[in-house]
Image (cartoon, rainbow, N blue to C red; front, side, top):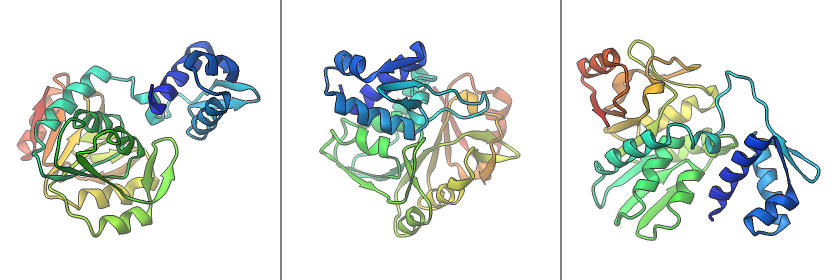
Length: 254
């Protein structure tokens, strides 16, 4: 089991049971207790659980808070996989692309693992880890300040690096898609980084399941016309899909 798979399972177990001990988790996963302690410390930093002496407790969050990335992996998983396969089919051998943070973008990276002669630039540690087992894919990670809950790198260091990059396609998720309000994010601190990402290609592919449509998040990242293609599932609201297409955006339903 890969480290991220183990950590996702740890979060699932603690969410279900409310608590777990280091000893029990070490025995369950067949690893050293020191390994589990590192897992719990990192998951606590991401606010996925609450670390206590000898183990961890379920982390209670306000109802409005967006769950951290490792927890969101389980949400709409089948839909994200279908979206990812559709986007992977749009990527040609030999291309240089950017893949952003978030769980749907991560699914795209996972769908590309078997490909060859690709260059993937990313600011997401989850994407880099997913592609670590793909030696035929060149991976470049943009530096920056770590956003713990998203495992992404943001801020002026990331933005400075992005100024020197040009790719054929940008693939990124988004928290909200609204025709009038545009593309929006829940986190103000990553606003400028997201805008820098959108500027490095003439082809921007937004990957988002139907729950993101009509949602207006805290910060307006860009108008909807910043997207070239939106790939979503067939449950996306028909009226919003029609308006996006009327605005000249290609919408792919899977």
